[in-house]
Amino acid sequence: MQAKRIFELLLSIYERYNNMEKLVLGIESSCDETAASVLQWDGRQAKVLSERISSQNHRHENYGGVVPELASREHLTNLPIIVSNALKDASVSAEGIQLVAATRGPGLQGCLFMGYSFAKGFALAGDIPFIGVNHIEGHILVPLLDNPELTFPYLCLVVSGGHTEIHIVRDVGNYECLGRKIDDAAGEAFDKSARLLGLPYPGGPHLAKQADTVSSSRFSLPKVMRGENGFSFSGLKTAIRLLVEKQKLNSETIPEIAYTIQEAIVDTLLFKVNEAVKITGIQSIVTTGGVAANRRLREALGGIQGCKAYFPTNFHSTDNATMIGFVGALRHERGEVTDYDSEVRSRWLVEDIGGGN
Ligand code: KG4
Ligand code: ZN
Image 1 (tube, helix red, strand yellow):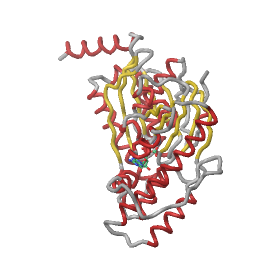
Image 2 (spheres, rainbow, N blue to C red; image 1 turned 180 degrees about the horizontal axis):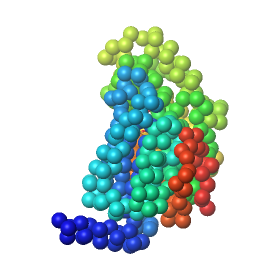
Image 3 (spheres, rainbow, N blue to C red; image 1 turned 135 degrees about the vertical axis):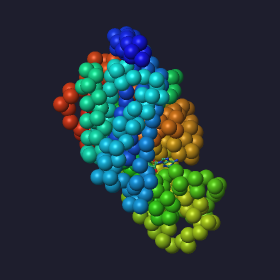
Image 4 (cartoon, protein in one colour; image 1 turned 90 degrees about the vertical axis):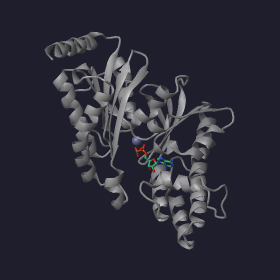
């Protein structure tokens, strides 16, 4: 027993001082997912050793949206379990971790606070560096991990439950925002429409599933967001509500209305991406965030003439801790560390982070 302990200790000392390979723990808790991942970083590339996630969908479905107080309490319960399971899956001891990265913002303050404090405590106990990561930067950079052939610069459409924005990504930390949401995010447009159709929470994937059962629809919706700078789904939301209120919802009309809604949202996003391609001349298009898991959106963006479309894996499209660990590794490689006395930032624009070339 003692020999085993000594061996583990020697192994962790070796892991810590062997600078070439670093074991990184990533933690995500900005909304309703508690996630932890362990990555092996060799100075240039990351290999995912384990990824664990606990979704709270069941806790919030009766309310039709995330209840912040409930969500933060769930994080508090889940964090030690999720992190220890991620370490176990990676066959790594807590002492073997050499860098901790956690989501600092943007997100729900109480939720961020849980993961960020847990991660700081973990780093302090092990006397190892700590990095506070911007959640959107995680979404923006994780496609590099999943697509080794992808290089800077690229256009990045971030479409999630809370965010809709498009950026020029020139390097780590060098982002130029070309437009972002004015009101609802694309994911919210999916979720709220799904709710009108009586589909379960969170509605995006359920609406997509209904839509994909048909190949046409007798219904139509107006084209929106043609003259504006940012993304606004409020006009479309009203049109969707009026359309749904006029129809009798049944097994025939629901898939057709879902199809029309999906086409309208995808068409709007496609229009904005086409505009960005014209303005910038950049032909690598990355789409990321929860809505990037949408099959129809992937198909539409994959069809833009002269451009190549990239996506993270479906698992890395929605919230996950791998993207946080990955950004932590990239930033630490550039000599960055975050102070232990830093605080969470529930509002934090990705182009304001800095640290890029
Ligand atoms: O990135 P994410 O996991 O969390 C946020 O940071 O918001 O995104 C969640 C959003 C939800 O609105 C969900 O309905 C939507 O992504 N979503 C989808 C699909 N899968 C997830 N929307 C449309 N089609 C999908 N297949
Ligand atoms: Zn997200």
